[in-house]
Image (cartoon, rainbow, N blue to C red; front, top):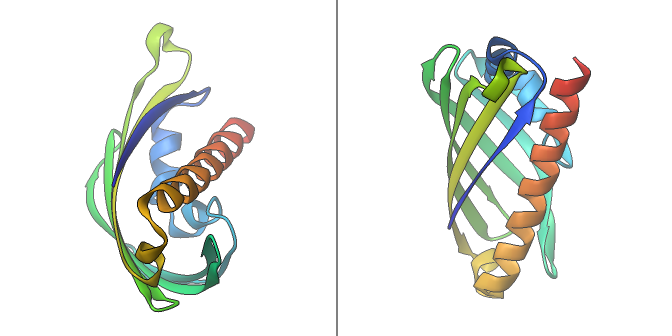
Length: 148
């Protein structure tokens, strides 16, 4: 599954980049996250309560920052396991000056692979749940960046 989009925030791209690259701050925008552990500057793990349809529970997620090009590009990978399911996610963030110099235009893209019990509920339910999570995460990111 592939998702992508963009949004503007009224802060400089360096500030956006610093937020996205900070494991403690970036995980604060994910819904229902518990127990974040920073392993090193490129690796961290967390537990998150997730759900699709009737399948709900905890998932252990390991995240890695795989590419950094300050202050314009970041790439991450995540692998989650739990509830007889696994999720693999690759995402990118590209930051550029917004038109008119009023802040930063953030372009993001994510590719996800879901297997196991969660995949069995059907692509429409998985897609609807993914869209909901993406909307919450982007909304939270915009809110935190705009408030800082």
